[in-house]
Length: 252
Length: 367
Ligand SMILES: Nc1ncnc2c1ncn2[C@@H]1O[C@H](COP(=O)(O)OP(=O)(O)OP(=O)(O)O)[C@@H](O)[C@H]1O
Ligand SMILES: [Mg+2]
Image (cartoon, rainbow over all chains, first blue to last red):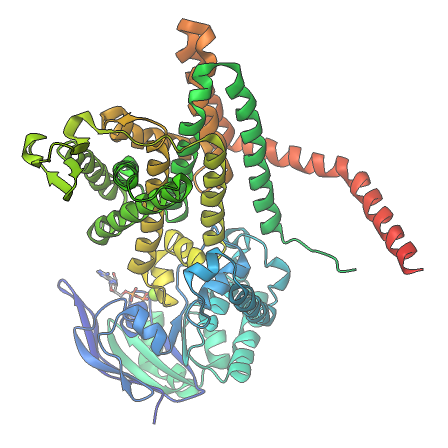
């Protein structure tokens, strides 16, 4: 059974058909790419999958469980975490706290215990710190843990966003243009990191990306969107050689 | 010997508590200088609590509320009525006062919850306007309340004293626009300082806890907060309710300083709400320490400057502007950072010496 199964997904904004009859099947442990020209509807698909938008029609199943129409909070709890195309960090909080906010639903103590710093507060906070530091180490951010998130350089902000998403302990990780704004060196590093998190956390990853080097380097399968509909899908190499796809990207 | 290592955060908290104690000491001596100044010592504590608690809504949650005085008003009238009525049953003043503070905070907290439930769906200016309205509504409603008691218990009316139908020996507690009369004078500066410390303790510890981080996550980016599974409404309500409850605490404390209090515009109207907001903004939005200092200075200043007679408000205005610049101008912030670094540099040899000395001592102890 596939981890993520999407059928007949669609949504309109006023007269604009942003996503139409979209389907997708991502297996456990797979690295799957979603590509397409600007405005094709890729981010909209992510927003539908994570419950930011309610689908006009269609079914979304995660690990066999129907999650169509649930709120984004419920969907995160069901096991989908994401990053954003335009980075959305908690700017005025430290790098460490950003990850700890991601851990919010994995660790619990009451408000009362928190305010009066009862033993459980200390114990759980310590566990949270340790877990958060582990994640920061994966992304080589441990030295910057006390920086304000907004003071990080761009590439590291992207990494921090991935760390925060992973902190929610998802089954499926959605990355919206993780390499945007990175230089070739950083992109190369990011590819290694993405491979590494897949190995280490046994993560299933669905990513949107314009950088073809990254896409062909790490994605096993692709779906190409154009004007809200699927243009082509299948194994990466085949899809990238498809004349329709080349036409959509390069124009006539 | 175990080495105690303080995190940057707890060090910063300790400095805040230290500043509060220092300010209290200064206030105490300032209070000795004149009768008028002494009379301000209890209200200034209430003002500090109000400013710190409003900062929880404005600075930590990031929502503008202009109805804070309304919650204080509830705490004042509920706390005062409780004390007056309970004087016959509870004969230990300290216990009665403690309960009155608690009841004042609880009632304001419940009101905060009930108002927050519908209102916190709004954002920015809309929320500000609606909270402003609620503050006024609370004040005006309280101006219509008549409350008294006799042998048969409590009597309540919205019309006038006569319709309370009290027995011969009945006592009127709240008399509409004439306010509440007969509150025992339980408040004093010492308790005020304790309550300020308690308030700051609650707010700071909340901020550094799991819930506080969630509240600030909502402030920084609502969509991202939802994407990691944080319940927006729950945490908005939590911050708003705690903020209201602390305002109620301030109100109840304030009430026990006066025999009679009316719910007038200056006391509990939007003037007051805006005054508290001024403390918060000039002290630095989100800075608890700043709220404490700004509330103290700005509340005491007009009285301290009384000797300047007609120039008083002029100087007050200048202080406001200077404070605003000091808190918010980028140049001042850069200057502060430089000074801090210089201070640290100057102190470096001292701390090094101290460290060396203590490590020497440790060695000796070991030998
Ligand atoms: N909330 C919305 N309201 C109206 N139109 C929207 C909304 N969200 C997206 N759209 C429209 O849907 C279309 C698809 O947008 P989307 O952001 O999904 O594109 P994309 O494939 O992510 O593009 P890019 O590569 O530029 O990020 C665009 O025409 C966009 O203007
Ligand atoms: Mg996009």
